[in-house]
Length: 214
Image (cartoon, rainbow, N blue to C red; front, side):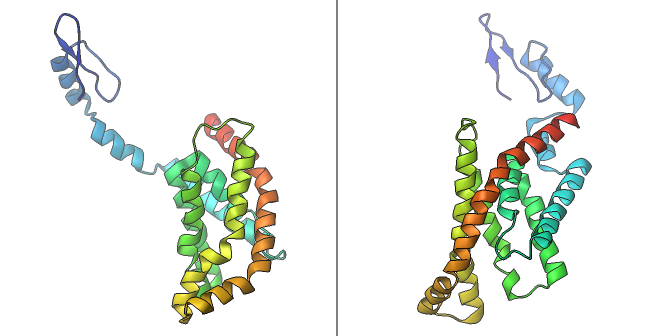
C-alpha cells in the first residue's frame, strides 16, 4: 500500500475501496476489516460477471448470425466491423465474443482445415486495434478504424496462408502462389471492410450507450 506522508510526519494511506481514515495503521485495519485489497480487486475485475457472460454470448451470436445473413455475398460481411467495435469498448474482454464466434463456426460448419486459421486471424485484428491510441480525436476515429478494418481484409489471404501451407504441405513458393491466386477475393474483402467500417463508430456509440443505461 502506498503511504502518503503529511507535513506533520505521520503516514496516511487509502485502501482499495477508497476509504481513508488519516493514518496508515487505521487504514490497514479498515482494509482488513472490509476484506479489500488491491490484488483481490484486480482479480475480481478480471473475472466475468453473469451480466458480461450474457452480453458476450449475445455479441458472439450476433457475429455468427451476421455472417450467415451475408453469406450470399462472397467476402462481404460485418465481422471486421464487430471485432474493431468490440475491442474499442471491451478491450481484452473482446476476445470472449470473438472466440465464441470462432467456436460457433466450428460447431455449425465443421472443425475442418479451413477453420484452423480462424484461431488466430481475428486475433490479429483485435491486437491491431489494441495498439491504437485510446484517446483519438472524434474526427480521426472513423477513418482510422475503417483503415485498420480494410487493411485486415486486404491482408486476410496473406494472414490465412501460413496455416494452409502447414496443413497442406506447401513450400514457400506454393504459399506465395496460393496468396496471389486469392488476391481478387482479398481486394473485395478489403474494399467491403472499408465501407462496412462506416458502421464501427455508430456500433461503438450504441454499445457504450447500452452500457451506461444498465
